[in-house]
Amino acid sequence: MEIYPRALRSTFHGWSAALGKCGAALGSYCFTKLNVISVSLTFSVCAVCCLIGVCITHFFIDPPKEHTFWVKEKQESDRITSSTNQTSIAFSPLPVTSDQTERFLHR
Image 1: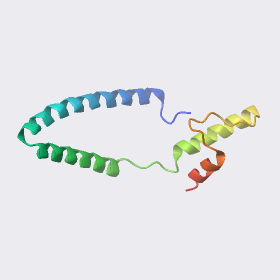
Image 2: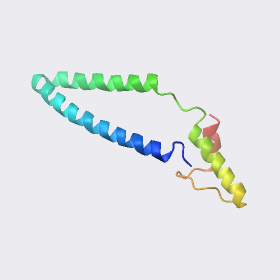
Image 3: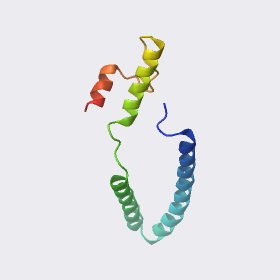
Image 4: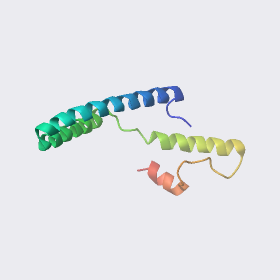
């Protein structure tokens, strides 16, 4: 079961890796220069960067609606179980009982 198509996932994994490496190089350069001036300034700039990241994540990333992944996994599991007429459930990446899944879905 896929939430995002493979091509889209691989593209954005590549972009994420590339931007992470650019950020690491830029951060190493800038923090080395800031460390010469003041260690407390270096930590302050790092804290501000972290707070900016938290704000961007909080305000611009929508929370998942109705636990989409778990709902789709349950639907796929039900489809496979009913189509094969077996009593076993489909593969789950986590060892979760059906009671735990139901409680999680109905929070």
